[in-house]
Length: 421
Image (cartoon, rainbow, N blue to C red; front, side, top):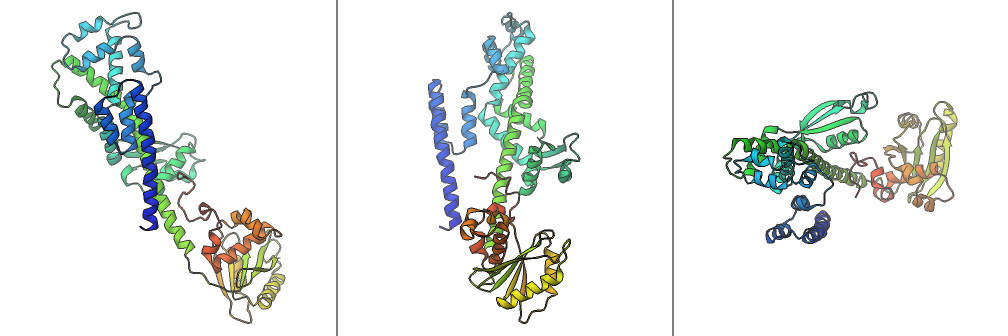
C-alpha cells in the first residue's frame, strides 16, 4: 500500500470504531427502554453510516419537551393513532371525546394529534434518508448579507446576494461562505422545491395506502406540511450544510497537501554559501551569512530604504560580506520591502557571479519564536533566526520547512477554517 492508502485506511478504521461505539450506546439505550425488536437490532447491526444509525435511533432518543410530548401529556396519542390507521369515518365525532380542560375544543384535539403525527413523520428513517439525498443533489445554497453588516463584511461582497447548486460549489467557496456566517456577516439557506419534498414525505409515509375519508386526508396533509416546514426542513438543511463543510474540508486538505508537497520538494540550490536578507523599511533589513552547511557565520542590519536611507553604507556592508564569506547565492524574503530590497541588491556589482532568489517567508516568524529556533540559536534574537530560516529554505526547503507548523506555511486554502483534527 502507498502512504496515501495507509492514511485513508486508518481514517476509515477510526470512523468505523466510532460507529461501533455509537452502536453500543444506541442498543443499550433502546434496550433499557424495552423497545428493541429483532428487525431494529438487524437494521442497527447492518448499518455502516453514522447518519443512518442516528436516523434509526431518533424515535427512541430522549427528547426535550416538544409540541408532540405536550399533546401526549394531554391524552391525544390514541386520537393520533386512530388517524394514522388511515380509516377513521367518525373522526370529528371521536375527536370531541378528547376534549378536556387542557384541550378546549375539537380543533385543539386535532391540532395536538397532528403534532404527534408530524413528529412521527419527521423521525421516519426512510423519509430523512431520501430527503437528505434530495437536498444534497438538488439543494440551492442562497446567501444574503445581514442588515447593517455591509461595510464590515466588505470582503464577502461577492456573496451578499448569491445562489448556487450546493452539489457543484467548489471547496473554497463553501468555506468562505461558512466563515462569513460564523462572523455574522451572511445568513445562509438551502432551498429545494417544496412540492417535491412533500411528495417524498407522502410517498414514504403512505406507501401506496388509500384514504377513504377526505376529511382525514386533509388532516394528514396538514401534519405532513407541519413536519416538513417545522421539523424536517431545518434539520435536513443543517445536515446538508454539515456534509458540504466536510466535503469542502477534505478537498481543502487535499489542495493543501498537494501545495505543501510542491513546496517541500522544491528544487534546493544545495550546499552553497548563502547571504539571506529579511527585508524591512523602518527597522531595516536583517542580513545573515551562512556557510555551505547552513551554519551562521555573521549577522548585521542594513538600512537602504526610507525613512533611514543609508544606501551607501548598506552597499558597502553587502559587498564586503559577499567578498569576505565568498557568497554564492543571495536569498531575499518575499515580505515587506522585498521588491525594493531585490532592486537594491541587483544594482550591486560583485567580483564573482552571485545568483539572487526571492524566497517565501511564510511561517518564518513562527519558526523564529519557536522552541526549535531557541534551541538552535539561544544567543540570537528572533530577527536573526528569521533571516537564517529564509537562507536555509533556499538551500534545502524540506529540511527547513519541516520545523514549522504546516498551516503557517501559507500554501493552504482556508486551512484555519477546516476541521483541525
